Image 1 (cartoon, rainbow, N blue to C red):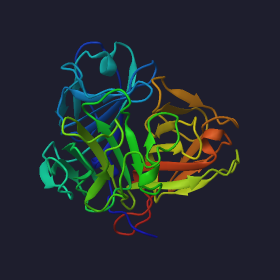
Image 2 (tube, rainbow, N blue to C red):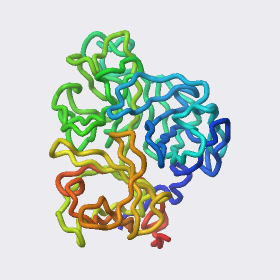
Image 3 (cartoon, helix red, strand yellow):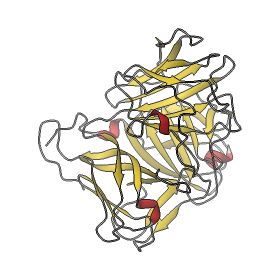
Image 4 (tube, rainbow, N blue to C red):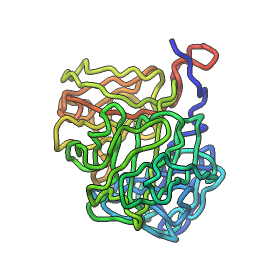
Length: 357
């Protein structure tokens, strides 16, 4: 049994919930100064919003069904990245009075970035600004497009298992796009209920140093007037796992996904047909197996839904070493991608078995 490299996952990733007050407030309990914060209203219709310390406070991406907005500016959204959380202004996407929210938080490098040259001389400029946390296998890149085929550096030092790319300057028809290594560069997914894009955006498979883009479509047309942000994640034993699986259509004895840890965060998406959304579950909101199973959808503004374990519910168990599906709903049965982050590894770095509580 493989050992983890991260004994305490909460030093790099954590989940907090809070209630909006419509004014200003500081959210604490994260356990570190976050560098990437993803927020969603739980009880009300509202956008997903992502902000990060590379772009800085006052800048965020938002989702309204397909993430088709350029980078947004708000002086009353996330106003500070604090030592144990973050501060908020009165922006309704972050802090509507009496609304409840969840915030998924990642630690990277305190906003400190470095410049890395890209692998293609056709890229203009031929560099990316990258913030890294290689212990947790996460990086953020910002880059400017060029007028032809090009690549940008991701900084992981290995082929990214999972990449999210968003244009900062293009809104319409420029959704948040997912590149899953196991699906291949010719099967990128958008944040809607559509199927894979095909070869629209990427010229070749990512390498251990760069992601390769191409100039054929307005979504990722890398001309010199367009800029982008990209988030990259790699597999890390006992901490983070990205993969593929297949739902077996069994309500009581569904597919088991071995992760090597009890998950804190679990995202999945069926990719073999259209009409399927991306689902987000975490152990902060899902406090036990069985009973209500609160989940959020990435492709919609709707609030939190709860599954109760019926045959047609989106229902999974979080176990000490992975995830067990307990539903024959069509959203869970078929070909699935997933991304999971640990709450507690199954085995410590010293080889000691750990019992997930």
